[in-house]
Structures are given as C-alpha cells and as structure tokens.
Image 1: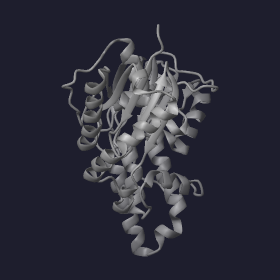
Image 2 (image 1 turned 180 degrees about the horizontal axis):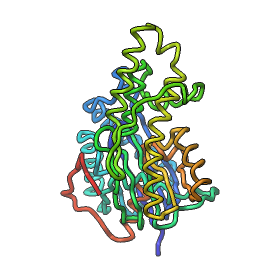
Image 3 (image 1 turned 120 degrees about the vertical axis):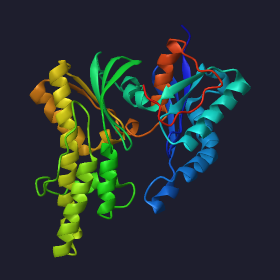
Image 4 (image 1 turned 30 degrees about the horizontal axis):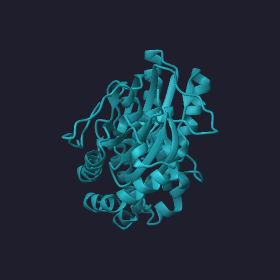
Length: 340
C-alpha cells in the first residue's frame, strides 16, 4: 500500500489547528490560539469564528511546510464536523470543502470526541510508547464534555456514561472564576492547588445514576460555601486560595475516579486511558497512576501537547476512516451537538 498522508483541520472552539500525519506518524502539528477571549473571561463564539477565518490559511500553510509536503502529496483531508461551536465549525468545514473542490481530494468528517480518544494511536518518530489493547475504557474529560467510553476498536466506541449537567472541565473553570482566577481558569487552578492541602475543605459530591456524572451541585455548594465564609472574613479567598483550589480539585477528580473504578470493576476491563483537555490535570493523572497499582490497570495517558484541542487527533481519526473508505460527501454540514 502506498503511504497515506492525511491533513487534519480542527476548528471546533477557539483553537485553529492543522496537522499532517503519514501512516500514523506525526509530521507536523500547528495550533493558533485566540488571546482575544482572555479579557472576556471565556470564549466568545462570534469572535472565535472571526479569528478562525484569519488563522486557518496561515496555520494550514505552516503545517504543510513543516511536514515537507504539498497539497498534491495528500491522500485526503480530515476535518472536525462536531461537536463544537457552530460558527467555528462552519469556518473549518467551508474551508475544507473549498480545498476539496479545488484539488479533487476526498474529505473525511471527524467526531471531535472520538478524535480525542484516538490520540493514543498517534506515533512520533524516535519515541516509543505503548498503545491500549482493545477493549479499553477511556475517561474523556474536557471543558464541555465528560464521558466514560468503552472502546472496542478504533471506530467502535460506546458511551456508557456522560455528564447530566456541567462537565468536569466546566466545573474547574467556574470554580476558578468564582475565586477570581483569570481565564483559562482550570489550568491555573491546578497550578495553585499544588501549594495547597486537598483535605482543608469538603464540598458536595452530587450523585448520578450508573456511570453518569453531575457537577452542577458541586459548583453551587462551592459558591454558597464561599459566600458564607466571606461574611466572616472578607479576605477568605485570598487567605485560603491554595487550599480552596486543592480541595475543590480533589472533589472533582475524586468523582471522576469513582465512576472509572466502578466501570472497570463491573466490566472487567483493566485497560484504562485518559483523553481530553482535563487529562492534563496533574491530580487526575496522578490519581489514575496511583489506582493502576491498586487495581492492576494498564494506564495510558497522552502527552500534554495532545490533550488539548489539536489537529493531529483529527488526522489520526481520518487515517482510520480513510482505510475504510468512509469519505464524506461535499454537502456534509457541521453539527454542533454531534454524537457517536
């Protein structure tokens, strides 16, 4: 078989990304983030879509140049169809359709969440790493999604648990915002938590049925706790910020790990993977590694550069679709709430 060269394009939220892979090996991976959202304390959809329009051509050009290839060398173009912000998705989808019309290249529609999971099958030259064996459980945690997925094959995935309200990443960000931590709150909260005592405070741990998650109650509990504490000490947050961060982080991560343990025990699956932006959280990574010894898990944690939104994950998902000749028609439309 000839070499398969896939260009991946990701534009689901506020990062414009492009990457090129050759037979699972990453040749380039470029990301242009959008600083404009910092002053608003969160992503502004209209500004995000405008920034994608400005960034997408330079990012794709940079990815192709670093990979040392031209558009003529490509086998296909993979792109994020959803889920995500509709305006952002429209920019990426429209750009890819234009490329396809101009070049005749086939296109591959990709589910953003499936792509996060498939980063475990990316390869990098000179770096050896173990890959999960099928079936495996993936705890997929990001700013907008929290899911437990049983992965039976590269494109055979079953979501067995998901959040019924807020995602874990959203809980991190909202709790950070309540404490006055600037955007992006989650990663900064993680850094501050490293200096705190995770057992200083206790917060509500809402229950959800089966393998589902619920974080809205935790957010409310945290808000009311701070409100009551500030009545007695106006500087309570500043005086206790590391301990507050560490305690709320322990609560959020603990709820994730409890459901992961439950699913592993009930399914008998000991192959455990993390994916998504929140898989960069230090407490979550350490917690999974610690449980691996207790429960005899084989654990797979992606490199930090492949935890957040990137296009290499879109390209690897496209690679597997290319092998199965699952090409998308030119009339394909983005889907903000796409499921798999």
